[in-house]
Length: 232
Ligand code: TMP
Image (cartoon, rainbow, N blue to C red; front, side, top):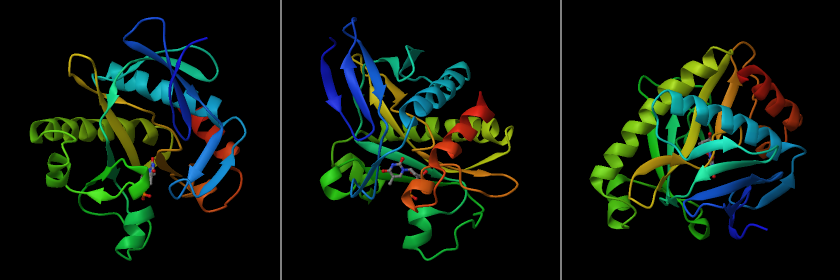
C-alpha cells in the first residue's frame, strides 16, 4: 500500500514508487463555502480525473510545465511531487461568483480587461483575497516568482479559453495552483476541472460546473459529463 502523504477536501495524495512522484486520487467529495457545505457527487472523482488529465496533457503539449505524468486508472494519476505554493491564482474573463457579490456587479458582465486575483491558501482564514505585496511579506514567494506565475497563468488562460470555446464552452473564471519541485522549479499543479472553473454553455449560458452544487441547481453529474464529452 502506498503511503498517504496528504488528504484534502477532494483528493488524496500518495507516495509513488519513485521518490519524486506522487499518485493523486480523486474523491467524490465536494465542499463549498470553505467546507461548510458538504456532499458526495456520484462519479465526480472519475470525471474530474479524466477532465483534469485531458487539460493538463493539452497544457503540457502547449509548453506549460506541469506536474501531470499519466493517468493511472479511473480515479488516479501519476504526478511529479511538488511542494504546493500556498497561493490560489484566479483568472476572471467574465464577472461572476465572489467578485460579483463583493463589488455588487451583475454576474455575466464582460470586463474590458482580464482580472487576476490571488488568494492565500489557508483554510482557517477562509482563503482570503490578498495582493502581491502580502504574498511576498507572508514569504509565500518572491516578486520574481510571482511574475513567473502570473505569466504562466495568463498563458494558461489563453490556451484554456480557446480549447473550451472550440467546444462551445465559455471559460468564465478559474483557479489554479503552482508547486515547486525538489530543484526549485515552479510548475502548474493541483487540478483543472468543473470544481475549479466556471464553465457556461456558449449558447444557453447554462452553468456546467460546481456552481450547480454551490447553488443547489441539480444535475451536477450530468454537467460534468457534458464537459468531459465535449473536450475529449
Ligand atoms: P470565486 O468567484 O468564488 O472567487 O471563485 C473564482 C473561481 O475559483 C471559480 O472558478 C471557482 C474557483 N474556486 C476554487 O477552485 N476553489 C475555491 O475554493 C474557490 C473559492 C473558488
